Image 1: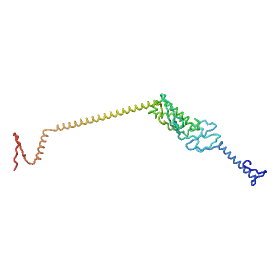
Image 2: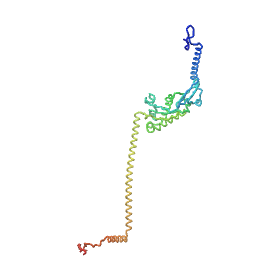
Image 3: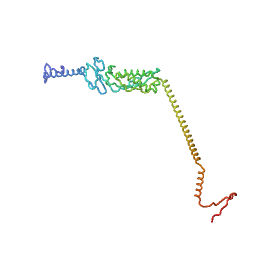
Image 4: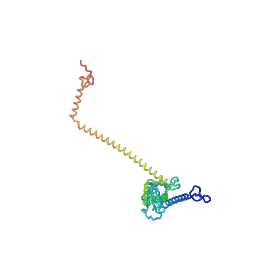
Length: 326
C-alpha cells in the first residue's frame, strides 16, 4: 500500500478497472485541497483573524510590537473585528457594572477571609465587610489598558482596586473617632471614602457606582460595649428631657387654662357690675311712680268685681265675716 491509499498491483501491474492517469489526477487534486486547507488555517490563525465583540463589551487592538505610546493610538473596537494575530491582539473589557464583595464570610466572594481592616483616629483597628460596584467608561478603555496592562478584569478588581479601597478607608478613618465610624456619622464617613476612591480611579475611566458596608463595622467587644452604653445613656437622657418637656407643657397648659378661667370670671363680674351700675343710674322717682301706677293698673285689670269676704279690724286684730250680697 502506498501514500494516499494507492494500491500497487502485484508484479508491477495497475489494478483492474483503474486507469493510472485517473489515479494521478485524484492524488494531485487531494494534495491541492490539503494544501489549501493548511494555507487557510495558517492564514486565519497567524496572518488574519476575525472575532466578534458582543454587546456590553469594548475591545482594544494592541500592537504586539509595543509601538503604541498613548491612548489615542489604541483603537476601540466593537462588533466584528478583523486583525492580524502576527501584528496585534484584541483584548475585550466589559463596560457593564461590576459588583464585588470583600467579606470575612467564605460563602460570599472568594472562599477566604477578604474583610477590610483599617485604623480609626485613636489607632483602634476596625474590621468591615465591604461592597463596591463600578463600571469602566467605554471611551476610556485605552487609558485603562495603558495604565494597568491587564487583560483579566478580576486581577484588577481583587488586586489594584482592592488596594485603592483599603488605602482610602485608612486615609479617611484616620480623621474619625471610632464611635463616629460605628455610630451616627457612618453615612458621612462612607460618602467621603467613596469620593476619595472615585477621585483616584476617575483618570482611568473607572466610575464608582456604589460603596458601603455589609453589616456593621466590627470593633473589639470592650469598645462595642462602651459605645452601646454611651448610646443608651444618651437615649435615656433624651427620654427624660422629653418627659420633662411634656410635664412642663402640661403644667403650662393647666396654668393657661386657669388664667383663662380667672380672666373670664373677672370679665363676667365686671360686666354684671357695669350692668347693675347702669340699672341703678336709670332708677328715678318718676320711674318708680310709673312702675307703681303700672302695677295698680295691672291689678285693676285682673279684678273680677267681687269684694273681699273677710276684713280685719283696724286695731283689734279680729276678722269679721261680711254678709254675702243678696
